[in-house]
Structures are given as structure tokens and as C-alpha cells.
Length: 468
Image 1: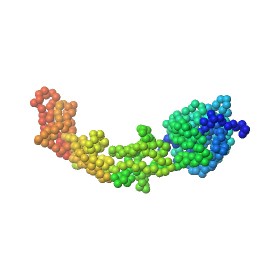
Image 2: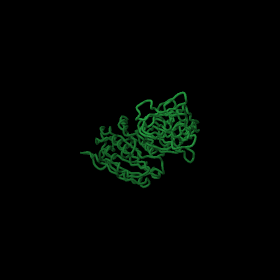
Image 3: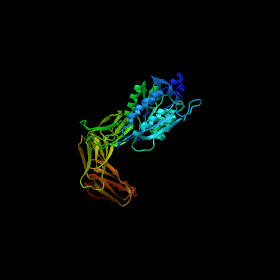
Image 4: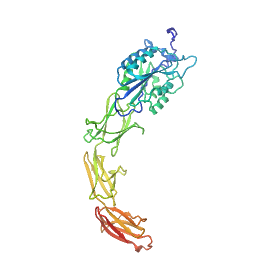
């Protein structure tokens, strides 16, 4: 098509004028292990409306010039691959629109090789057709061939809103959910501000009003796309120093139960909290799985810088020990925050556990139960709780029957547990002290046939109580 055949679009078309730039990160954006390769796919609008005047020239010529300079700046960037997809460049839009007019013109290769190829290909393009944004966005899925340790970035440049009845917002959201790419960046070139809301559902919006602004926005988007954005989580002790560590952390997408990352907090070899790489395009809710858990809501990750997330997590230790010879029976303990009914943890004897500093109530599941109130956990110290080792008592019977065990200190009798009426011989582990066994065989039908046996249990000592 000659320059004389390049008509200026009418107002109807001018209202459609816009410039989009999509920057979308791969959902599998994980903790930084080795060097991440950034893959940028340019989706370039070469539809007929690109002949519209803009500033001192027409849009297609300004776009070619600015894109050429931008591509030149990418040549020597390490760990960067580039590709080019175009649309609206193979079929004239009259009399019928070709809503599948999109093609991968330059497949992925390193920036040093492809920056020149893409520049040369763009310069040869002539705007012809329509604007199938949704279809082109969907087709780019196949452009990102499978590769590990990469971030997939899409930059879609267009001067018109969707003209083929597609739904770019829906396509974008669906591909995000599938892990193809993440939240886009949107740039409108010479765009009426009222279209900002139209593109808001697709991603972050930038307005480009002139050539110089176009250059600046491209640089900004590039910085946000490939600059390493890092995060460290400081788990603060009581002195507000980041010394706490070795605890699981879960990052959720803010306001949801959508888990994005699970990490075990680590202090690196330099003595600092280890560095993570998180996708900076969403906000996070962080749960640090201490006992009890500590939470931080709606965390904003600032792109292009090292972010520090501080969480108060001062901890100390609780150790449960048996005082005496160890037998086969190790009791367990229900841990609750003082004054609360909710079970926080169940800790076995012989184990050491970390807890957030404060006071806790312990219910030790021995027979009989041992209740300890206001057990205090202090920063970086260990509170050791010792109880006597239980003695094991064999209750020997001649047959089945009904009975119970009680403590008996000579003044009061308190129930401890029931005997199993389906067995004749039964071993029960009891804390040291004085007890009474009350029993009646099931074949005896007189209350006066009740059998009582008083006995004393000593720590870690076996004995037999005969109920006959």
C-alpha cells in the first residue's frame, strides 16, 4: 500500500485509539534458585487504525521508532529472551474482518540475536486489518515453549480496543489461573482516560500521551518486569532483632485462601534471614506457623527493590520430661493459651517445642490428670516441666466385671478411670500415690459382693492388684 493509500481514520476509529502493554509474570515464580531467565513476548498491533495521526506523525511510525530504540537497549541484557507476535497485518479489514489475523513472527531466542530480528520485522510491517486482542492473547500461550526457571512476560502494544467480540479480560484471567502469566500492565497511547476502566480488568494501566512519555513508560515497565525484586522475612525476638528462624511460613494471596508459597524460614550463612523472590504483582497475607501462629495482612511488595517483612515472633522453649526411670508409657500434654479453651498443641513427653512467649495452661494426660496453670515461656529460654514416671499396675481378675480406680488419700475419694469390663487382666499406668480399686464380677447380682482393694503406686515400679 502506497503512502497515498493510507487514509486518516474517522472520529469513530479515533475513539478506539489506545496502546496496550501487557507485562505478565509466570505463576510458577518460585524462590530464587540460580539465575532466572526472563522471556518477553511482544504482541505488536499492526491493525489499520495504526495509521491514525499522533503528535507529529502517525502512530505506526512513532511505534516503530520508539520500539526500535527500546529493542536496541535490550541487546546486552543477560538472561533475557525475546519474541514477536503481530496481529492485524495479513488481511485488509474490508469488506470483512479477519478475527484470527495473528501470527508469531519471531520465535524466542536470546536478546542479542532477536532484538535486531524483531526490529527489522516490525519495520517491514504495514497495518492492514482489525484488532483481535483476546484471540492474540490466547494464541500466545503456545509461544512460551516449556522451560524451567523462567518468568514469562508479555508486552502487548495496540492502538485499539477489542474489535472482534472477544473478552480480553476473561482471557487474561483464565490464563493467569492456568499459570501461563500473571497480572498485566496496560499502556494506553493517546487514549481517552475513560478507557482506563476498560483496561483495568486486564492489568495495571499506564497512559502514554506522547513519544517521550512512551519511551519512559517502556523503560518503567522493563524495570518492573525484569529487575530482581527480593524479599526477606524478619522474625523479630523480644528485642526487635531478626533472630527467630526455622519455622514454616505460608504466603496467601491477600484476602483469600489461595496459597502462593510455602517456605521454611532460614538464617543464611551470613547470619541474615534468607532472601526470597516473590511475585510483586499481588499483595499477600502471611502466616508464620509458630505456636500460636503469627499473621500479617495485605503485604505490598515494592518492585525493583529489596523488601523486608517484619513479624513479631519472640519464642522460647517448653520441655516435658519424666523424672525417673523411663518405661513404655510416655504421656502427652494438651497445651492451651492461659484463659483459652482452644487446644493449641499436643506435646509428648521427651519432646522440646517452641512457643511464642507468654503464659500457657497444661493438661497432662496422665492418670490422674495433672493440671498446670500459667506456665511461662520466656525469650530464648527453656522451661522444663518434670513429672514422676508412672507406675504400671496389673489388675488381675478371674472373669469379666465392672469397676473403677480412685485416688484415696484417707480423706477424699476421687474417680480416676474405669476398668475395662471385657478383659480379665489389664495394665494401667498411674501416677505415684494412694489408690482404691472397686470391682464386682458381672455374674454377681448382689451389691454386697463388691470387692475393694487399696494399693499404693510408686514411680516406675510394676505391681499386681488381684481382684478376687
